[in-house]
Length: 262
Image 1 (cartoon, helix red, strand yellow):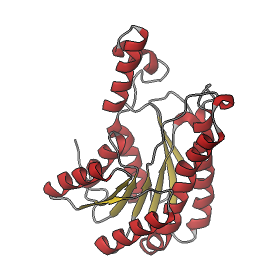
Image 2 (cartoon, one colour):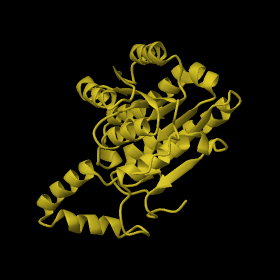
Image 3 (cartoon, rainbow, N blue to C red):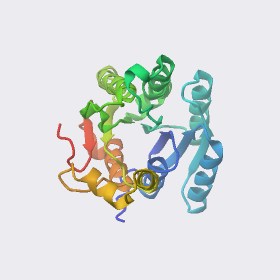
Image 4 (spheres, helix red, strand yellow):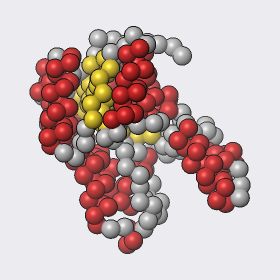
């Protein structure tokens, strides 16, 4: 893998760091020169990842943080500034599994919870880190979803939450632009990695087929006839986080191997 050092000397805060994209993104950012603050609700996984990065010669801090809680967000900001003295990039990567039910069968509480995490949780973090990001003329990258591009049944609550996140991102790009802060979004499609592979294997057992057949059927809708990898999605996020995109704000970069055109 080519290392560009595109994030050298930058402090990057990543929320929602779990298995899959969050871990891949943390490793990629570290290898490209960033000092990292890793945030999520499950602290054991965070501490293990931070230890691996620190043992490899990088700088990483693990902070347990529920981004729906004002006090925990404040603690995250305090811990970040105490450890590194600045913040250059905030990546909102928190994820909630969709209900996969029609809206008529989805509780209003589930919808509230989805919006609370995806949109309002990201907003809490952005508001809290705005002073530091203004000082560094930094960047915010909100990880969205290709659910924005379709209206498939059973994704209603998820689409509502991600649509709110997109609208919020666009408004914040305008509001924070005068402070020198860029706000962009990345909208992945299906992300190929161990997490999706395990899901396809589960589906294969359920429907009496193979995971490869499910992969091929899913990828058939894309121009490239494959699914984007965790590394490819991470590359798009890192581009939006880096100075390579210094003239870009208020935009959404789709990463779906051509499944949807925008």
